[in-house]
Length: 142
Image 1: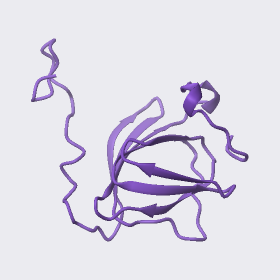
Image 2 (image 1 turned 30 degrees about the horizontal axis):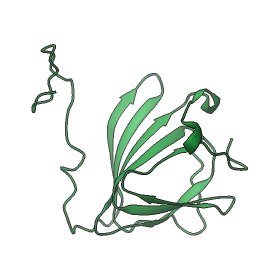
Image 3 (image 1 turned 180 degrees about the horizontal axis):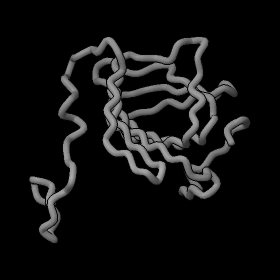
């Protein structure tokens, strides 16, 4: 791609941007910043999330209707699953969370900010293929 985001075919992208453009070094946000990047009628959504020390309340759990693949592209974070298992993440870490796999965010870094790209889809999690070396199953996460 050229600097402007066009392809060699000469087509101009419908939408382009930079996920780092909204991240101000040292800025602490009062709330997590969630920006939808893409939404398709086939049940696919892509979100950009900036967290600066944000956590899920101690008595709350995410129990999402859609499957989620999350990539931490900056900072650090720790997720906890209902079975007590925790998953520490650093920039470059990714995780697939099947629908209704109860989880919460225990920790996100403040500086640098934790920057995520989250892809949600409503397809059958059994039809998702991933590398054997990174595949794992957890009780209660089906």
